[in-house]
Image (cartoon, rainbow, N blue to C red; front, side, top):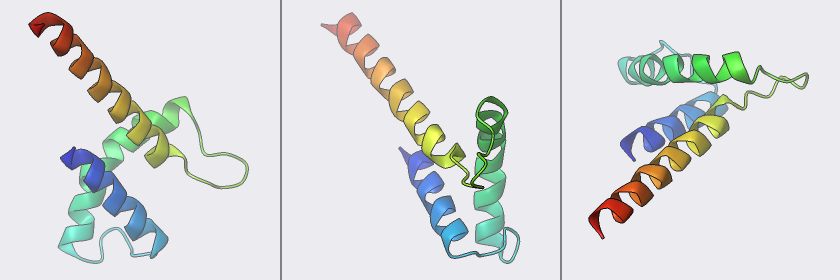
Length: 78
């Protein structure tokens, strides 16, 4: 859940057009999220419109993993 918030903060920084390494906080956010986004972009490249869907896809993947892990633990424990 913390990583989801980090992704949301990254999206906000991108919308505000804050350069990735303008301050230590934004640099840390980019260092933490970029490896995951890079893997997503290998599968789904940036479209013709220049819209980066990597944050959205990353959030969906995280939600799916969270749901799957939760359902597996629920079936094992009950």
